Amino acid sequence: MATIYIIDDEDSIQFLYKEAFALEGHKIVGIADNGMQAIEEIDKFRKCPDIIIMDHRMPIKNGLDTLKDLQKLKAFSKSKILFITADPTVREEASKLGAALFIQKPFSILQLAKIITELNKK
Image: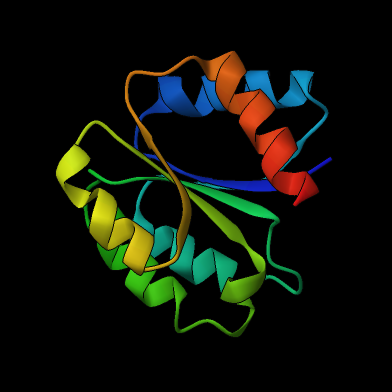
């Protein structure tokens, strides 16, 4: 079981993630609608989540800027980042900033849940 933190501004996506990940036995430890909210919450965690799933296009703070701020947190290196977006032009920068995996939309939610299970084993 992986602990997962979701950063995405779409309620429907948040719901789909929660449902699919629960089927695989994962635990959602937090959800943020934007990068700024996520940084504030993750910084207060005693133990960072195993996996952080992050969208790129969000209000207030996008995914790339959020990745830059996550790098400043002490426990960041312990979390694996799944960067999910419809914008393939940010793939290289997301990888340079520490994303363990880049997934381009659209994708299968059940396939994503299985990817998380495999990523958590590494």
